[in-house]
Image (cartoon, rainbow, N blue to C red; front, side, top):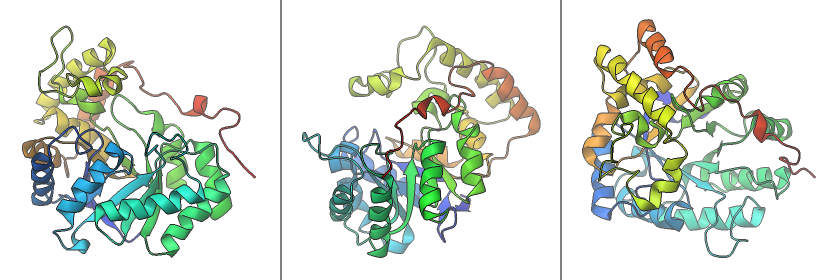
Length: 333
């Protein structure tokens, strides 16, 4: 396992991180969660990413029970704030009140005094950005988080925060990024690189599509994420015929390179020096080890060219975030 520096922080994080979005928030039993977490440590993974909203605290609680058995300095722990935590629609967002309340709740569930990285899960257009920044800074000043990050902010939102608090406010960005979703390359990567931020990318395997297990015109594998009714909505976004066909064209590229499809897909995202880590999900320990094997894999120019040719005009390839930057996206005082 290789490690990379996270932005301007002193954190060294594994190139592969273990996430808990659709798994440890309720989709996987506790024993499996524990087994996958132990497999991560065996594979050299030291970076664990969760959020308060995953299972409305269930994912944090699971890792609190598991990770608290290990020395606190043996892992890097990240969580997030923003999502709705109860049936009360007001119980969400990035107001000072919510951030103050949610960090304390997350720490209780995680059974720790601090998190290494506290991330704004999304941008809150209903709260002045100055209020959000001040509240996040207070979390760090109080010792409850070492560093700050954000997830899925537009370039305009990122720049607004930098204009107010400077480039050292955040150390990381967490965008969706994969062979099938290359949008951040156009605007987000250049902006964050200019300001010294690293990326921790989510869904680098396009929610499992880039494993190659889904095939056009064939039934869904019974044990797959797409076959799980509770996850169908999130999978429907990426499971188009065009995407499935593009993945089929990638299979011989991986084979020629002597790699599995997950290794190819993860090595492809990790080719970018802007990245510190790629978050993977796993419901079985062997999946953790298989994904961890991608760390250190360097793709040749011929393999990268073959990937580009195989992808062709695959959906979501090369789009930008510009359409998201609509009027009113920033709530300023």
